[in-house]
Length: 178
Image 1 (spheres, rainbow, N blue to C red):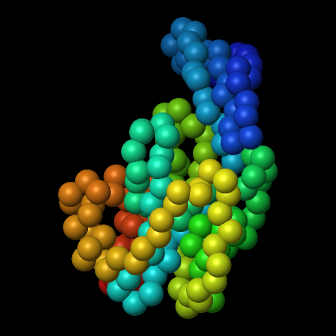
Image 2: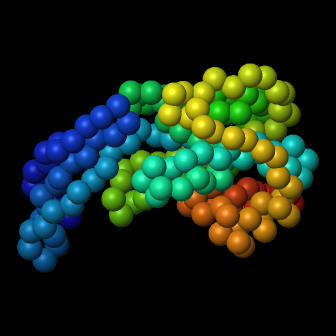
């Protein structure tokens, strides 16, 4: 597929939206709307058989959601994924990881977005104060056993795609049996 032209149609501090005119392999033309967001980090805080989750109101779906700590750097900046993961973990939960391990990557929504998330396992955790952004002021946190987490998934109490994909990467980790 060849890009014929591209134009930005919207931008804010978190994303840009562009419309690309394309030429398909069969010679027909089309358009794609693309949401460009910076690289994200998803962090799985694990202490024994307990996972630390955050819950917040997600405006686009109009509901509160339990998920792993995650996010991007401010003002659409790109940041080293490991540094971003450590920052998001401390910001949202107050936890600091003694060990951070990259588990893999996730394309967030490849049918409409260019964003990729790097998934990290955080262990050897120490508690501290959170430093939440204004948009996270209603955030709650909690520890859940692996059994509780999996039950929440079964009941659709956890439906965030990045959280579900991150958990799969954790389960597929060699020697992992949370």
